[in-house]
Image 1 (spheres, helix red, strand yellow):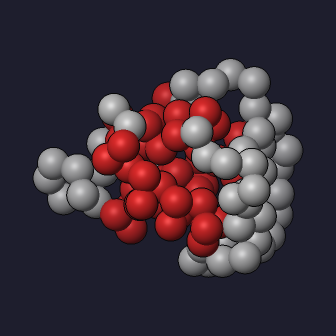
Image 2 (tube, helix red, strand yellow; image 1 turned 120 degrees about the vertical axis):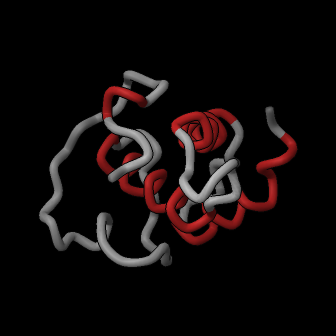
Amino acid sequence: MPTITKDDLLYRDYHWTAYAHDDPRRTGEPDATLLNRHEGYEMLYFINGFCARTRWNPGPQATKAAAQKAERLIRQHLPSTVRARAAVEQWLLQHWSQFA
């Protein structure tokens, strides 16, 4: 079950372009594929995957609050030069505790 759904996202200005189920923007582990932080499906997929991999919040499951924090950090604080999914994940891990 995903940590968050479309209705849980904090921002409402996403584009919702559907990708094929096997599209590299939606499959596999984070890699060099660029994350479009304004594409809703990409953000949901990335954030849910990030929460599933990290699990540092209370309990064995990631919380909706953690997922929304990841969304907020990506949208408000992530430098525009950080675009690859693996780099976005690394930036979140390195800067998580710097933000409330």
